Amino acid sequence: MDESIYTGSKVITRYPDVILSKNDVPYESDLTFNAGIVRQGDGYIMLFRNDYGCTQPEWEAGKRFKGTNIGLARSSDGIKWQVEKEPVFELSKLGDPEFIRCYDPRITVLSDRYVVSFAIDTRHGVCGGFYETKDFKDYKLLSLSVPDNRNMVLFPEKINGNYVRLERPMPVYSRSGDGDFDIWLSESPDLVYWGKSRLVLATEDVPYCNDKIGPGAPPLKTEKGWLVIFHAVDIDPSRGKNGWENSWKKRYCIGIMLLDLNDPSKVIGMSKRPLMIPEAPYELSGGFRDNALFPCGMVRDAEGKIRIYYSAGDAVVRMAYADESDLIALCSEARNA
Image (tube, rainbow, N blue to C red):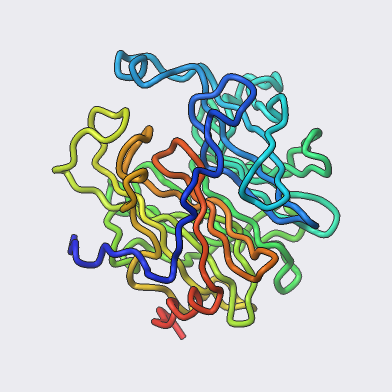
């Protein structure tokens, strides 16, 4: 890979402090990351992944996490958060022996409810699933994909009469036999039955990727198109220990693209350089897996700024922001007009 392309965009400003860490959680917690965040009314709502039951020395000695649950936090400003006293969702407690755990929530606000997508580990592979809730206490399963699929994000409105999702299928053989996972789109009349699946963006379309890409946060509607952030992974065999892992050869960057408002399978623009790369000291060390940025929330705040919430090192949630016009301007190089 050409290392000269790995420069983060200057339109991005990082918020200097951690948004959420294990220290904010009033129950057992070791890693808090990959959170879904929405702005609703006068405040913000967050669902976050919480891994617990393992420290770095224990991990390096061969122990693994005891479990994963989903926590709920609320905030008036999207910066300082109050975490609920107990987790709000833990798939392993639902009693279905096929389901193991759920993680990586993303939240979409529809007119009368919230639809939350999860990655769901089952005994026969990882699936993507949608649950609906009105109060973040009771959850109803709407649909579950077949293995192997994940990173699903739902558009906040119907397009041409259908609900639309972005997703990242991950077939065991893939196109190259090792990686090359792409971003796809599927449609549904009811959030239950999905079809009309088609490719949106392939790994070879992203100059700073040699492994896989996947959707980050639910798309944000702008006058110019649907603004979408995604993760892009490159592998370098020369990389060694990063974070807790004895060998971590991947780097996760954040990309940005613009999709057509009426046909969101059509990419009308994409930045040919990363929007964000791991470069701040706290992104390069101190995490579970260093060198990894994972976008998980994108909201328009009260001042009109676009906030991008992301995981740093698979350990904490952080935030950056930019002007909407600057983000759109980055997507000036069209892939297909």
